[in-house]
Image 1 (cartoon, helix red, strand yellow):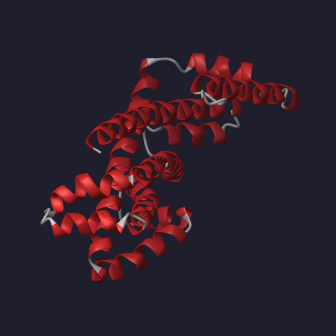
Image 2: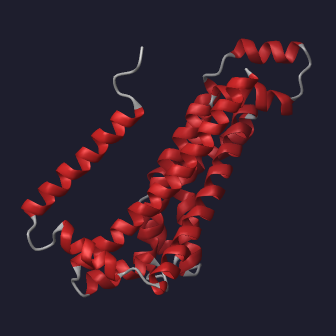
Length: 248
């Protein structure tokens, strides 16, 4: 039976939802409308904007990848070794609950604005990846692990044939949520630190000059960047899911 909410139909509903919200925006805020923001967005389409976008995009991408790998690896280590978990859990608690603004202000005392943006992504995204992965590992099928141990399967083979296939949903959830938090934290750090040549700097100046159309246009660019990165993450996990289905 074909699912009622097929992929194409779900996309249509999402697009319809976007149109509804844009229509409400047009009615509620006549001073700053989707049309005026789009016009400002067109004006931003130049080489200078491209450099700013690429700078921020690669900062977010590198920070996200490091955070994702670090959180996932630490989760596996904490799952295997209680001593490592004893050391990591307080750090995760600190990163998860400490206000981002406070951390940014503290980091500015010791690092450059670019370094602050990179570190704040790690502090924000790493706990998400760590906790999601650890939760998945704690809920795996222990019988499969025991069978692999009985047959003398080494840890490397276990990783790819026992653990990863069972926690793919948690790994995807970490990436899916982490991308949004990476952009949020990076832009916040750039605005507070006034990072030269970044989107955050442009948003700061837009606020300074009360240029709301420009601010919203830069926000639209950030949303587009996030959508592009999200698309590639979805494709990668789709390929991995098909691969592990063939293995299993």
